[in-house]
Image (cartoon, rainbow, N blue to C red):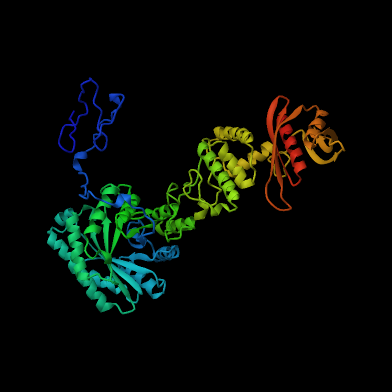
Length: 613
């Protein structure tokens, strides 16, 4: 077996024996020893051809400042859904779908939108012309179009913008060593000249073709910035700036794309801080970040780049784009929102945004997608459900104590980073029940959907009934099924019960109170199919009813009792919960009625009927 070698070329100490005779621990990811209790637990080489790949290069910036920074205001945003996102689709958008996406982006509040690659074909060119000629672009929205650095393509690109109020031409050329060697077979100077000549041509054609009604801007991208030597990326950007001459009121957008994501987000941030520090005329430069997600860390790379000095983020809704996609603008914006920073983009109708995106892209959003997936605010686990239910209860109590509504106080519900209601989601699907669920989740469904706040021991009792159902049938139990099971178990005489059953059905009752405080209860009921009148006395209607039941041979006594109103107003109903010991069984019953006394009697009947079922 080959002995592994560390980056410095020294023999890795794994396998060496220390003075005590124990196996020396392996090194962890940053070269420090990782203790192990058993040498056989060490992971083995994968056998994969790792020799084919090289690690990313670190940036020499010892006094970096970005780790201490916080994002406290939203960056500028540019959506590339209609260009970068559209290019990556199996079935590129039709004109109707492109217009639907454009209108969505405008409604959400995006002020910079890359609308196409008009020199690539008639479809993109015609779309750019259509939104200009039809007046679909609000006055405060800037459209952007992409072009390569070839004269005929630049001319066609600028032609597409005639009549636009605010427009930017985005020119790019690849600057990375592999492209210089393999694709262009040119030197650094030759590649830089492509960028310089392209910039000059954009300016010439804009001056010749566009009228004074167009506020014209320029953006340049040294493509595959992540693979380009920093000093050369800076050299090219400075040469482009020398042509454009940015100054007050005449900014230039320098976009540094992670065309292929190569490094950790921290190194990506280092590259941005280095560029931001070393660019001349920095105050007239909008430094833009365009991450892709090849390593799965595009969101982190974008956020850290902003901390390191970037001014703008380019990306797509839900991370559309080539290969693993562009950075996800929805996640980025909602991350800000969850930290109390206004993203200046409206995500309040997240399901409409998702549905429109799915229609336009003809691709589904994953159910676990952050903030927008079907299941991202849903808990199946019993412990999670219990914590969420308690969180909602605590929010209600805290708000009441402060004399405020729940929406006016700080959000603090376990497992929910934001209030689902803030993005247009109801609480209906926050908790869903399967075999992994517990009492808290089931209790939440009953409280949220039916205003029934079950006592804790009753929650335990009913959760066992649902657990038996999920164990027997498998899969998820819907809120409708939970309610149907609850009615069948506790409300056998309700109008919509699954089946009517039970020894006793109440019809009417009357209570009188003597001068000594003793209550006499008279109840008309059907017992075992026979109409009868039950009479009893006690220190309240409930104790009087227990005495009345003795005449039917039912041995029942009260263990616990609680009640609450289910709504406000004259027509409000009350829910009563009673725990009883009946013929050696401990069971709960529930009664619902506008009259609190009658609700209590119904709760006793519920428990009695369950005991004889």
